[in-house]
Amino acid sequence: MPELPEVETYARDLATVLPGRTFAGARVDWPNQLPRGTPRALDTGVRGQSVLSVGRRGKYLVMRLTRDWLIIHLKMSGRLQVVPATEPANPHAHVVFALAGGDELRFHDPRKFGRVYLLADPAPVLGPLGPEPLDAALTPDAFRARIASRRGRLKPLLLDQTFVAGLGNIYVDESLWAARLHPLRTADTLTPGEINRLYHAIRDTLARGIAARGTSLSAGGYRDLTGNPGEMQGTLAVFRRTGHPCPACGTPITRLPVAGRGTHVCPRCQPAGRGA
Image 1: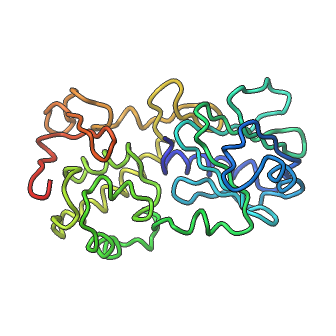
Image 2: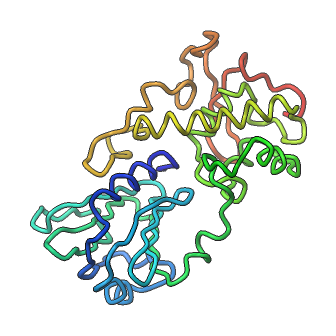
């Protein structure tokens, strides 16, 4: 699933090509991707609206239009493309936005889990999200205060989009390894020093992911706006590296289920300790 670095890459790239463009309509062949609307409402709603800005909130791509907000969640397999309308049709582009001038914004989503919203107010979708982990407002003290009230295990907590927004399976595993914390540790067992390590590990891991333009783990996985893979997969320490040596100590990486997710740890660098 595209996480914060991948969606941020899309937001930055789209911000160079979409602002000032006007939508000429939309077509949808999988209505389930519109949980708060219909294909007809999306088509008529976007017509004539121009893109004012493109940004990101958590794992959501957010476009400010003339009147409304267009919000896209890529879910498991979503990709975005801006191509001439004359390009061959993409059989997995189930939501396609026509742009005045002859281009299309295509939402390629083979697994059909992605979601598209056209809203006058983005609060119903974006309001429940927690703070942005890279925002200057989330200081070490603010992060410490948020985690102090929690008792759950670390991996499910970091995956909770109401705690912090944008982290997913890849970057949680990598952040916990960088912080030398076991995913089954509970938040209430962390020392102030461990909380500080976790805070900086999250920010550093995400910043590296953005600089690498995301992580592509398979041929059918994430690709950027021009179809190129990310580069973070070449430097992952633990995620999907079961049996490979830990980059820090050489101990083989192990895999265990946590909250229904395959989770990757170094048993030596991330001892279970108390609370796990």
